[in-house]
Image 1: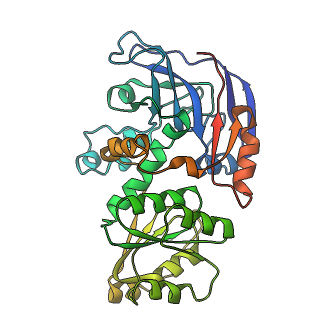
Image 2 (image 1 turned 180 degrees about the horizontal axis):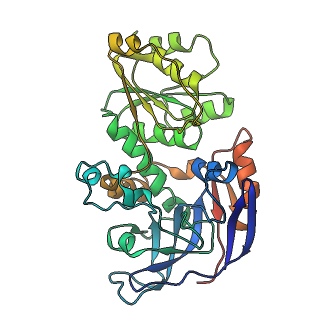
Image 3 (image 1 turned 180 degrees about the vertical axis):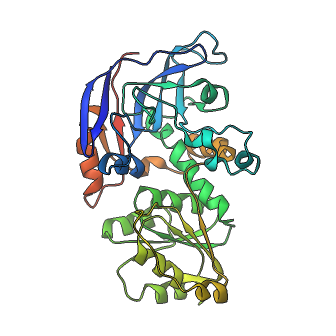
Length: 352
C-alpha cells in the first residue's frame, strides 16, 4: 500500500509499505478521508518523534479485513476510527480523567513502524482493545466520510466546553477563528451560549459571524477589552477559550474575562513559553485557569450524534482537499494559510 512516511523533520516520503498484518481480534480499515490536525503538523515539523512513523488520526473509512475473533462488524462497513481508547480501570479512568490514562496516551492504531495513528496511509490497523471498546463508530447512511472525520476533533472541543461548565446564556470569548475556533463557535451556539471570536485575518472574522458568533473582532484592536465589556454589559465574558497558543491572546482573554470567570487553555503552547503572571490577579478576581487536552470517552457518542445528525455544519469548515500523495503540500498550506484556509482533508486511495 501507499503511505506518507515521516523520515525526519519536514521530510515526508510517499512510498510503498506492507499492509499491516492482523491479530485475531484486530480490524483493518481502508482509509478514505483523514483530517490534517495541528498536532500532526507539529509532529512533522519539529523533532518530537524518532522516524520512521506514519501519523494521522482523524480517520474515516471502510472495514477491509477482520481477524477471526472479531464480532459485531461486517466487511465493507463504513466507520470512523478513534485512535485513543482508555483502559477504564486505572485511577485516572475511574475519575473520568480518561486522557491521562497510560493506555489512552499510548497510541496503537498503526499503518506500520512505531504506532503513531496511521491515518496517512491507504490502510490502518485497529487493535483489539479499540475494536472491543467503542473505538470504531458506524457511519450512518447519508453521512459522508468527510463529515465522519470530524467526530474526533468535535469530541475534543466538546470536552473543553463540558469541562468549563458552559451553560446556556453564557458568553464565551474564542481566541482564534481557525477550524477549531470556528467549531467552538458552532458548538457554543448549539448549546445556547454566545460566542465572541477574535482573529487576525479579516476573512476568518467574517467566517466566525457566518457560523454563528454573536460578534467577531480583530485581535490586534487595542480597544478589544473595552468592546468586549460593552458587548457583555460591562461584566466581561464568562469564559475565554484559548484556541491559539498566543501569550498575547492569554492576556487579552484575562482582560476580557469577568470576575469569577474562567480561562481554558485548549491550544498547546511551545515548551519554552512561560507566561509571567501576578497570582493576585487570579486571587482578587477569582479567575479559574484550566486546561483541556484531547477527547473524552464519555462524550464519544454525543460527538458522533452531533456530527452525524448535522447539528453543526462541519462542511462549512472544510476549505481544501488534497490527495494523500500531496500531504507535503497540504502541510505547507496549513503553515502558510491563505485568507480562505480552514480545515484541510486528505483523501486516500487503496482498493476495497
